[in-house]
Amino acid sequence: MKRSHLSFYAFAALATADANGAQAFTVKSPDIADGKTIDMKHVYDSFGCTGGNLSPELVWSDPPAGTKSFAVLAHDPDAPTGGAGFWHWLVVDIPPEARGLKQGAGDASGKNLPPGAQQLETDFGEKAYGGPCPPAGAPHRYVFTVYALKIDKLGDAARGRTAIAGFTINANALAKASVTGLFGR
Figure 1: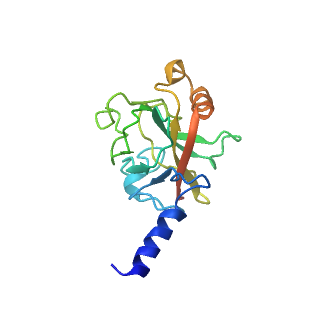
Figure 2: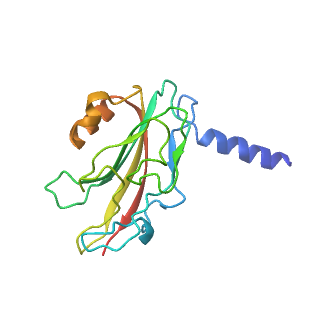
């Protein structure tokens, strides 16, 4: 390899590190392009929407030292709920060795989740992925956030409401990374 190529790759590696030299915690999705429209196969199939309701694949890398579990939350901050937004997917107790969730992991059976992971009840009232289905009008943002946590399990918060789970997750987050898709009708 030419010297210029080596320099480029060395620079690229440094550019992805934080100020302390550690790699930055990131999440990517082959199904959700940041800032782009979410495909119909991931859209809810009720409330006037006719999508496939298939949860997207998420892949994360470089969690911080001390990560004991992960949580994945999918939220629509633009939902007309008086400021609370709308929770579309909550997965907790994901083991620390996991580096992603496969497409379809949000099925209600939970059979495609990593061992020990569990789904909490969404604002649709289901313990499963519920895709985008905003009211007619401007597109909404759907934020998929992966949290690296300093706790093994969510404990009693896993039986609570979304606000309690969110509080516990944020209070124990070492790092978080997000990808945001759009959907409107």
